[in-house]
Length: 339
Figure 1 (cartoon, rainbow, N blue to C red):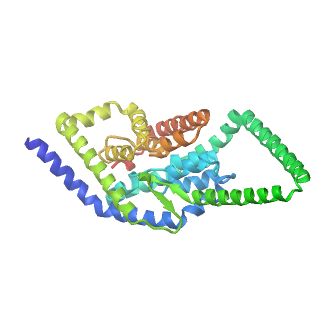
Figure 2 (cartoon, rainbow, N blue to C red):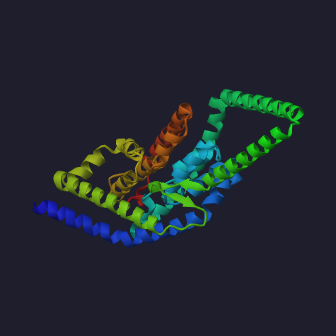
């Protein structure tokens, strides 16, 4: 009983210290989202050749909302698949706020962010190339169908214009045009609502002060639970035994991090960060884990994007390159990045 109470008190103490800092970060992020989100949505840079670089920069912002937003924008074809992948890879979710809270981890954090931005750009351009290779035929068919549909539509409109001289039909056409305009206005209004994390809507120029508080409380709860679990595990197994286990299975660390990171939940990035800070994961392993850690963005993508082949392609483009680059860094002599 004393051991359980000790674990709970120690976990609560470590968690409470983070709360003010986390709230400040999420408050500032919410403010930035409310001001800039629609510039992000309408940016032509997210569809062109520079889209992987732009996506990587946006993804480096410590907020799971950007991965969610990117998934919804990709499902409606407003950004390229390369930009989506770059956002997913660059996203570090809760790792940045957690590592910022401890000044000792800041040098490693800077290297981690820069590494993931570079990695996101590389994987983004690789995705751009491979997507053209694997989906070229279907893309040509889609364009052909769209052109055929557009030609047919124009022919029908021309035919209707020649035949309809009746005033009654003209009134009906005007009524339909008004309805169509109203529908377009409604659709345009809908486009100005973007679903971010925690299932809230971000509207243009609207700042919701409650969301940073709610989000901070949820993440604080995650951190507390993870602290309790890790604390209980260390207490049960023994810190020395746990360290020896991770050290003896050094070669499997990137795979372990990848399995944890692919879990579509904010808590997975918390687990990875805590393990890295405690010395349980190498720098290469946490890079691999956080590169596939797109938070709720992956869940939103699977729900909103109906093309299952594309979804499978995106998941594989997250897993395979992240694991390869993770292992490449894992076996490099990067002892200066260990906490």
